[in-house]
Length: 407
Ligand code: EPS
Image 1 (cartoon, rainbow, N blue to C red):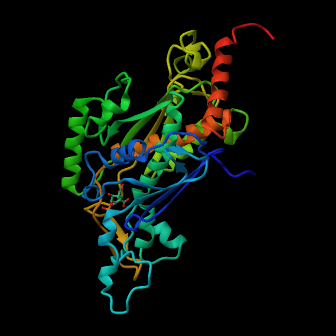
Image 2 (tube, protein in one colour):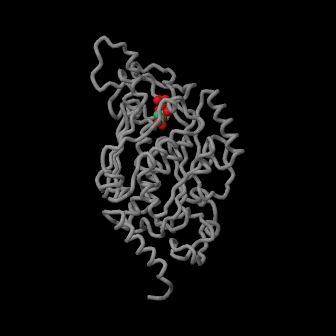
Image 3 (cartoon, protein in one colour):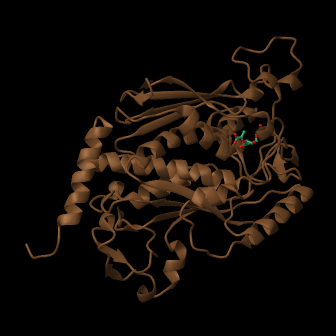
């Protein structure tokens, strides 16, 4: 058996704890010759991830920006690994609790900020068993969604590559708590519209109701989840493959989006809704579309497939939805068991967000961008962006010239 390898040409790694010194992002496989300026291309994405109504006080402490360590010279990528660091400003408040050195003998145990009552729904308990820890801080520091800042840094570079080929990625919030926004046509510049709204929702009335629901949840000491949609436009037909299970792009996208902290469901196109409809109301009729060379001049009169058929891009907009459960740190905590003595108590509480769905949507964009950039390089190869472009352009020209006829 082969391991499941969603990424074929690109690879990325992140390291870092939520209240440690910082997060490291390492991205390998980006071709040489890509113009890259972190202040222009990466930092604004980090800022987008920090926003959203419902975030806690931590986001007022942090002001994320990426420090470049390697992989770029004179404004262009070198083809070598790109490494970036995002320093945690909050670290200065955690130097004792998150010290790399063993604690002093006379340290006040409280200064180490231990937690012994795992939060239901969090990685706390399973992590404590798996890694043989008692203090669940050893688990939660890495399980924290702070790690997604490093994913967004890598995703921003992937977006920069995709933009060279006019492939754009945006997202918006579909629902939070019980409020579901009505379906509206997607604006051309999806992120410009979504980012202008405090919960990244395209419908202002729904956004108002969502914010009221977030306020009420906060008042109750509760948290809220929701659904976001990531949309990619400009993709050519033919990324991914149907020939083997681990080459199918739908599976690779689903794995990437499902890997985001607190995501419990992923849908592509109609997703679960398609399972209850007859086929005639699910599949998208084919139509001639000479004006759309990236679909091969044959388009679809609807896009219920969400831009993928057989695990291969169709050239229609790609739609991936992620369902995020409510954050598991509740200010009015649920019952838990104390790992020191087995006594029953309430789960640990600490500063957290009430809702992070708007941020998760931005992380979703990053994960989708990384998978799509990988699929682009898988099909077109290229050690330099120029080489990738020549191969890409030749393919688009082939699609344009292909015409009809039996062979
Ligand atoms: C998080 C808890 C909160 C969030 C954090 C994720 O942090 P803190 O415990 O420091 O208040 O703000 O998210 C981030 C720091 C971030 O950058 O997204 C958690 O427990 O997962």
